[in-house]
Every structure is written in C-alpha cells, then in structure tokens.
Amino acid sequence: MDFFVKSGAHYKDTYDLRELIGSRVVSKNGLVVGKIVEIRAIPGEFDIEGIVVRRGIFKSNLYLNVNYIHQITAEAVFLNIDPSIMLKGMKVLDSEGELIGKVYGVLRKGDLNDLDKIIVSSFWRRKVIIPVSAIRKIGESILLAQDYHVNKKYFWQKP
Image (cartoon, rainbow, N blue to C red; front, side):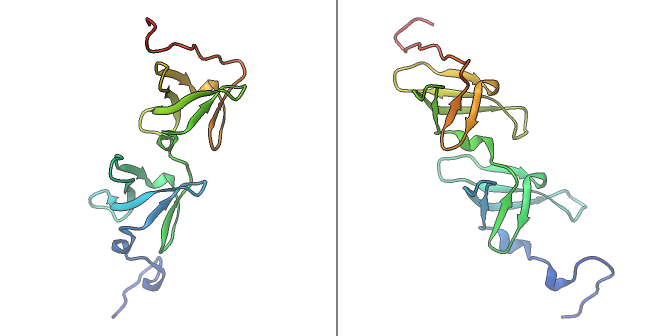
C-alpha cells in the first residue's frame, strides 16, 4: 500500500471504524452499556459525531454524542459518563433504609444526560416522582435525602 500523509496521524496509528461495530460500550463506572451498531458522522465532514448503542432485545437503542466518549480502543469504547437511563430497575431507599420501590422511569433535562426526576414504583404503591434534589447518593441503589419523605399512597387509595 502506498501512503499519502500531509499532516495528522499515520495509517498505522488509526482505526478502521468498521471494526468498532459490535464492540462493547463501557460506562464510567465499568458497567457494560451495550454494543455499537452504528457510527454517525455529519455529511461532508470526517469527524465522528456519535455512536448508536444496542442495549439488548427489549431495551431501546442509545445515541451517544462524541462528547460523552472518553476513549476508543480496539476492544471497547469507554464513556466519561454513566448514562442516566441505566438507573432504571435500581432500588430506591429512604433515608432510614426502607425500600420505596424500584426506578420505573428516568426524566432527563432535554437530550442531556442530566437527571431531572426519577419515577419510582412498587407492587402496592402508586408511582412516585422524585426530584433529583431529593437524592442523596447513587451507588448500587438510590438513597434519598433525610429531609425528603415519600407519601405512602397505595393503589387502592384515591389520588
């Protein structure tokens, strides 16, 4: 192969983007988000604008802008965030450790990864919308602030 390089990286220092299809996408905390199914670019430009990630059979795909990508390797793409929608299914505990329910939905600020509110549901209780200001810590579960008290409304009670 003949090389023509005026400036920038040499051929041996670049990736074939087709090989990234099917690669794992890993969040900031090491959770596997899914696998790359598309690499997106703006027409007429050579820069990567984002990637489309397949999360699984029953989960919707994600489009992640290049600003959320920390590093690209031959084996995986590493993000500089934990996508907020990955909170779905996490347990939510009040400040005393009592289980409130699980995250049913995530409300974000527009298309950003910034969390606005979470929707929590449990088997017997109605869905509760909890603002991000009421969340003290997010780890293996979501812990609510001490000054936030969830109204215990059950499905058989009137709203």
